[in-house]
Image (cartoon, rainbow, N blue to C red; front, side, top):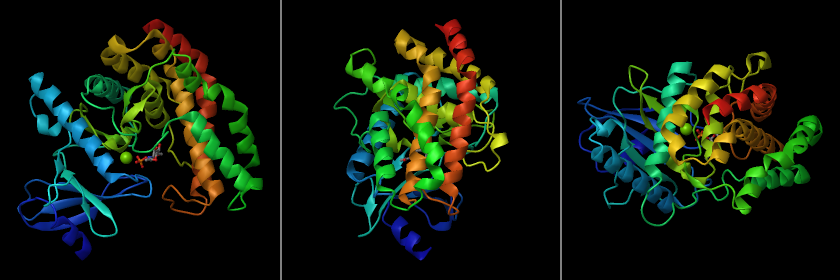
Length: 360
Ligand code: GN1
Ligand code: MG
């Protein structure tokens, strides 16, 4: 903890730190909650995983642009309580938006007071979440200047993910292939259809827009009444297909079980969450979406679950080099649970498509 105190002393904060505790469920960065003696503002301290986010300067630059732009939009719209509706980065003493201690990169931001995250939501909360993610995309649609930097190149590009998956299978680095062959076949079986967005983009039929690209349900802050305050974890915000954001929310909030559930019976797709999220999302997003983008939203739920299955499974085959794991079989469990969810979404797919037709 001494090391953490030292890190914090390199940021522009006033007051004396009383407590630093691990915080949140993130699987990539290490996150801490920082409390001061006088119990005034609290902060979030993060050690950025720079093996994954290789260009920290670009990463922090993106976040600054996004949060400044959203703040301006909220102010222009006459919103109250703006400081709780967008993130505020704390600069380091040298004015940079991060601090490098010679080995690791750190950043700090203000912890939004009286806010909560959830690992699961009710249909009512999903409706608010849909509105909020639609709003997030809408607010960023006119971000001025250069396009945002690609903090992880090809992050939600299914063709690229599939290539990585196939490389992992080919290499079989951890000698685990025989035990997962069936799952590998399941991934392969669906591969062509799952790459349709990239194909449609090349044909000029599908646009790319700024997305959040990590719309897990736990990346939203809610207030006491279940209203969404803001969207957090902006590391992966970049251009992509709107199905990505829609699909990742479905993958997490629409799962009746956990992402790594060992009891696969718990893992099914919740159509009520799908319906209420879709309603909320289209309320704020319909005006800028094309009919094809709307039609493909249910496909996004399948796509993101499939993509996550291929990423977890590739990581297991590679010998767990990417995601934090809590046990040796963790990535395999995650893969099995994603596959079960994918099957459940597939079973509900015709009904999801019918529902979307009523929303066009
Ligand atoms: C990671 O940041 P975190 O832990 O919420 C990952 C996402 C995956 C997710 C799986 C940078 O998200 O893409 O969907 O785990 N983020 C990165 O739960 O790879
Ligand atoms: Mg997160």
